[in-house]
Amino acid sequence: MKLFPNLQGPQRTVVMLLGVVVLMGGLSWASVPFYSWFCAVTGFGGVTNTAEVGSDVVLDREVTIRFDASTDPALPWDFKPAQREMTVKIGQNALAYYEAHNPTDRPIGGQATYNVVPYEAGNFFDKIECFCFTEQVLQPGETVMMPVSFYVDPAMVEDRDAKYVNTITLSYTFYEIPLPDAHAALEVTAPVATANN
Image (tube, rainbow, N blue to C red):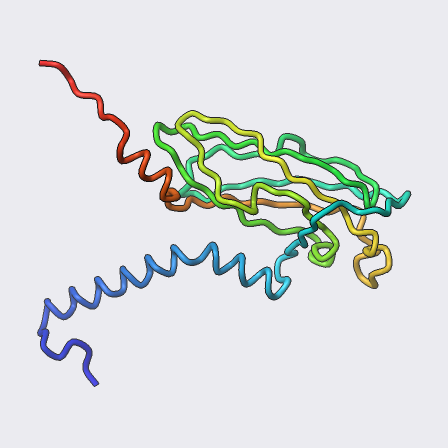
């Protein structure tokens, strides 16, 4: 069966190329939410858990948490952890911050994906609150401190593989996303400066 039977030669080629461009654009747009969904469902890549409240059990054993940050090359933000590492007791509620800065002259939306290494520790890394749970919008020149509240589940010390983990690295990568409707509407209706003649 021939695609686009009514089109011939160069017209058919142009239509097919446009179809490929639209398909690739759609796949690119869907890659971040699809990756997040895939990791959450399969546990791939050290996906963490979420918790409503902190742990009520704190052990004497300590673990070092390292913090890592990166951005997709298409996102012009500066993004980094406020501290490179901290040592916490297993079960202790902890709070860490990441800093994001938008050096451009336009508002930009971003969404963070995350993982934990080693992967076997991901199932025991519980986030209570995190900037990665929601979309972020930074205004031109804006710098924000973004918190992540977490604890390491005491059940980790009973796990066959995770009980040997002494260091956990929490990594975030920010990707640019379209501005949410409210911010996009503000950008469109913002007054435009005109030169007086």
